[in-house]
Length: 221
Length: 176
Image 1 (spheres, helix red, strand yellow):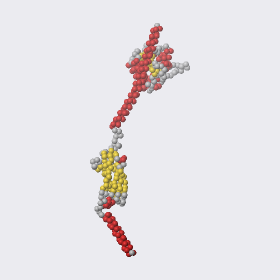
Image 2: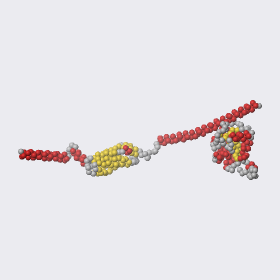
Image 3: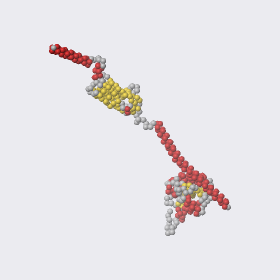
Image 4: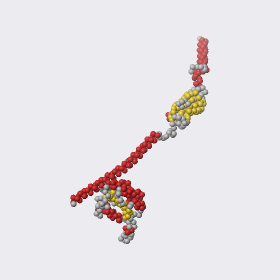
């Protein structure tokens, strides 16, 4: 009986060992195999895989020429936990897909990083719609992200007042001046008219009195 | 028509006015008064039995209008005064004269040059309208105005030495 038990136990042990070996073999195959569906990709992306985003604040969605455009680049290192240096390329494209401004910089990232960047918009760049493109350059692949914005005329170079508003301001000023002069003149005219009518009235009364007294004199005679 | 400037001592001023108004009784007068109110002048003239029915007053003294038939013009408003005199000339068709009592009083309210300019305009106005102008001025120490306006008048009557030197009861001379 004991002998059979011992034999049974050994048999179970052998089966377990084989099972474990098989599992180990499968695992080894999964890691080493270069052409898996998803796994190989996993393997390559685990070496260099990034998520790239750009955040363009609202106040920089319209930038006057001659000023800076500020933005934040967010890089997420999906694969590598080690600290690595990557190259970021910043470019501004115009509506005809030509690069007007370009700048590169090398940055160090571990798992994730945010970088505040700026580019100077030169004064001679024409107003219009532009694209800010950020490229993360790696040995295997480039990652891109972009944001659109508008370049406007610089306020400093713009006249404070447009021709139309200058004209309107002048017109209002002239109207007020004319009205003032008319008011002063009309006051003078009214005063003079008062004097004229008063004098006429005085003379008429005197003439009347004269006539009355001469009439009375005649009667007395 | 002639324009006369009569410079007289202060105490003789009223007598001069009385004789002038009396002499002009056939004409209509425009009396510009800067020293006395119209009421006072009329009273004085009536006391001297001088008729005032042919006199039109421009009272530059009284601030309150006492009578409706009197024109009140402030002495500092020379333009308004010229306009009033002009209107009188226009409205009175008869032969008329203008009497101003007294020129030097204008200096209290106006600058010398402004007064001189006013007198120049008045003399021109009188010539244009064929009106006799009689302007009176007391003898004053400040002769700047008189020196400026002498030439505007056809005739300037200055006081004689006898008229200016009057002795007081004490025998002292009065200096003007």
